[in-house]
Image (cartoon, rainbow, N blue to C red; front, side):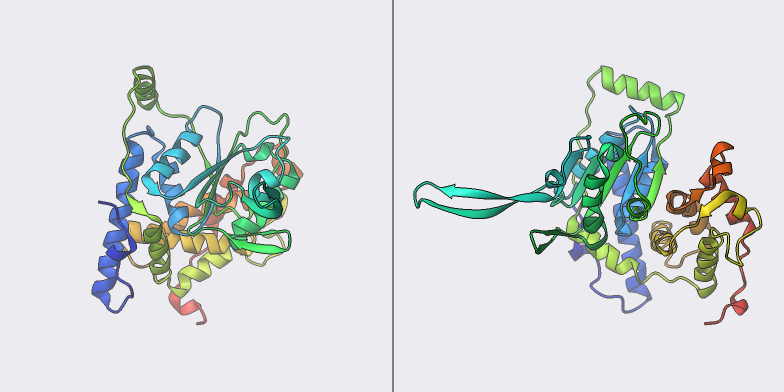
Length: 350
């Protein structure tokens, strides 16, 4: 059965509506996971983070070596969700018009007239795959800035809205850096998550070889429609976050700034630029989804611990010393999670 917005309550009126909405959203999330598992072997953590980003109305950047199934995962996601899908194969000769579209002159030979017509680019899809996004030039990367933030495109003086829901799932290879253009901070900051795609285990790799060499291709079913995702996004905004939990997220993000009173002493030696306010927003929105998927309607500390690294690691710029010593931003965030205290409810002014 394909889930639609009609399966969800239109408004939250009482505790029973809350419970029913949470259960339906959780069931849809789990069904999508199982359906993707028919095609993609392993990578459970990656799949969960992508789905959390989608249900939280965010974009995701997948980073990992080639051959780990990043593109396959995104393509399978498009098959499971009833969304229109577009793909951009980012190369050095890619032009902004190849992404957003362009205005062309159409000639009518019968009426002997000409008119300007806008031809939509691949960005006018609900699910957009930007493959090897760091191979596009900065000029082309900037073509995605407005679409990722405002869900619209400005061309030739007109602003055109993109279809909803709209998600950008980008991939990049961290190993082969020849001919690549690092994503600017403004671009990185628009991704809710940066997800590290790691190598599969021995058993998973054996299963991959078996499926590939024997031509075993699983058929996937459409689980949810776009209006269901939009309805979920609206309902998830009602998930409760206690003042002391929200304050903890705020102080955690502020602790990445060396000049903040909340930052430990070691931050100034390791972090030159801390996370932006979008980092706190990403954690809050994603934590609400994680709580619902776990069967709760309130955010807890463990939701933050599970999502802080993918939400913040691409928003932090390391110092030169930290880069030369190969100190990763993920390690710094985990250290902050251990050192930033959780204040009790009475310590928060509300």
